Image 1 (cartoon, one colour):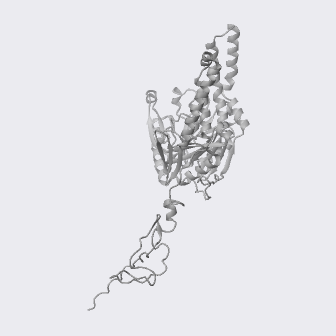
Image 2 (tube, one colour):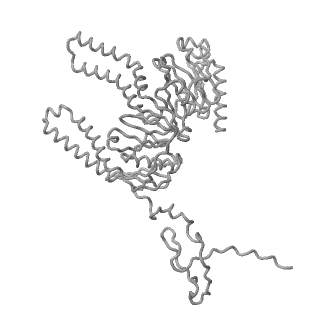
Image 3 (tube, helix red, strand yellow):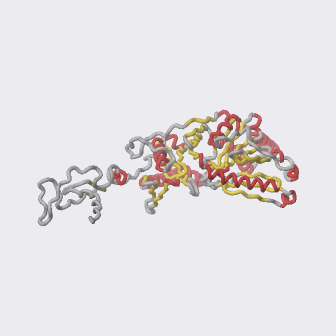
Amino acid sequence: MSAPDAPPPPEERPPPPAGPGPVTNGQPWPPAPGYGPPGHVPPPGQPAQPWPGPVPPGAWGPPPGQQAQLGGPAGGEEPRQRLHPLSPALHGAKSLVVVIAGLSWSTLSRVGFGWFAALVAVFVLGATVLSVISWWNTGYHVVGRELRVYEGLLWRRTRAIPLERLQAVEVVRPLLAQLTGLAELRLEVVGGGKTEAPLAYLGVAEATALRQRLLAVAGRAPAPATAPTDGGVPAAPAPAGRELHVVRNQDLLVSQLLTPQAFLLPVGVAFVVAQFLSEGSWSFIAVASTLTAMAGVVLQPIRRVLDDWSFRLDRDGDTLRVHNGLLETRVQTVPLHRVQTVGVTWPLFWRVKGWLRLRLEVAGYSAGEPDDRNRPDRLLPVGDAGTGKLVVAEVLPGVRLDALPGTPPPPRARWLRPLSRAAVGAGLDERVFVARSGLLTRRLTLVPYARIQSVRVTQGPAQRRLRLATVHADTAGGSGAAAVDRDLADAWELAAELTARSRSARRSG
């Protein structure tokens, strides 16, 4: 009986040759004794081995291209980049405004103009020196999937921003930055308490290219395929999106004139003039308080005009891009998969012209942001019904703004809403939950079923006596929508239907 055939020996990998071999991470393979080209004499007591011939690529060391991934073109990590050299001047200009505001006119009257100018010069010089030192010790670079920002001289601080948690990168250009051709990058990170603004200021081209690079690493945009500039940042322009709508500045101005503030302003001015003529003279406190109250009324529509000036909405793949601003231009990115609700508003005076306003609620943005301009909630500052229908269809495919269902509360709800019962309602569309509210200013809230996090049924004391209840559809953004004053049995049926549709939408999505 013959013995079974022995298994073939495993394929042996040829050992490295003598002398300098392939380089791995900057270190050559060590020479192996007993191996070498023809004519090589092995050491005493060691048999000679044949030279295996030309070694195929990849026989030793990392695969081709791994060296560039590990160490970069120069065998080391990417060098740190500095901000634009004009950054200290812009920060110093901000400090100058604070200094002049801090040194009141009473200081000028006490010390005189000469000493006042000297104090301002000393403070400005100190602020400029501190700004230069801060600029010199501030740097940034991308390490793997992190953006690292280095700051501080005495107290060093390194911020590592994980790019996989990156929500959006915004290119913002305040007025001084526009005058000097600079921009700043503001980062929105999921779960962050506020908008990060780590890089102020950069050149516009550099800021745009770095924005594209960060989004590409985070998987939010296609990776740029251009050679790096002298600063080491790929100089790839932002991909052009499909333009959806441009708001005319004329319509924006007229819309802010059709507000209660604009209509009440002449009444307030007439009241002030009448009071002044009747009193004959006013004290300084009375004049200051009156002007402050009038400024508070006027500044809100002015701020809206400045913020939404040259408003443009683009569609770029699965994201929306919002361009707006006059004194401070912004380019904000809204990922469509994180849109929680769409709100439609018809102000009272706008209904004469058939205008409406659209707002968004986006998950991942802090609701307690001190500056609401950092929140990308602007979808359409003003537009007609046709434009609103077009934009809503882009954000919520398959949803028709002019064909949404809705039923009012039962007649007994008039005891709670004697005037607005007909204006309140709720309904179930194929893709969204619809809730209507408001009498003078009408509002409509659309919540996709897949974005509903929880469903609640609440009852107040008066609702219990009338056998009514309110159904709340909560979202990750914190607001959601509510069907108010529904019949108690209908409210529980609506809550069960919302829960079922929400689960089904999440499974299919």
